[in-house]
Length: 115
Image (cartoon, rainbow, N blue to C red; front, side, top):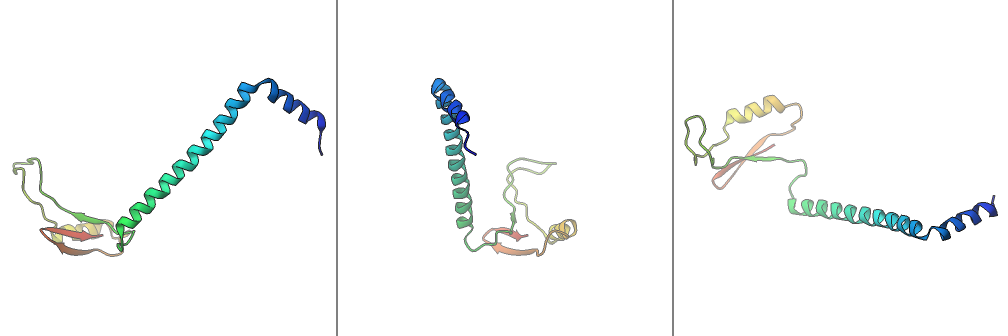
């Protein structure tokens, strides 16, 4: 039910504390504004990543090797590492319960593995 005394008290408090009322309203506005901006930015980034993926599956992971930059265990820097069939077998053995398919593809100088 409408209680005139309560509403009168609310409006009197608002009119007597104008700075506090303004700062509270500004804080609420700023919070809602930042929420909308950040949600929009997140959605925009997500759409951008999905469009960059093109026709690739969203649940695909590609693994490839590259030239080393540091020496390790007596081997010199600048060497190329390649993924071998033993590496693929180790991946299937270790992650077989979460992987549905493991396949390979050749692309230029680099041997890629689709997991």
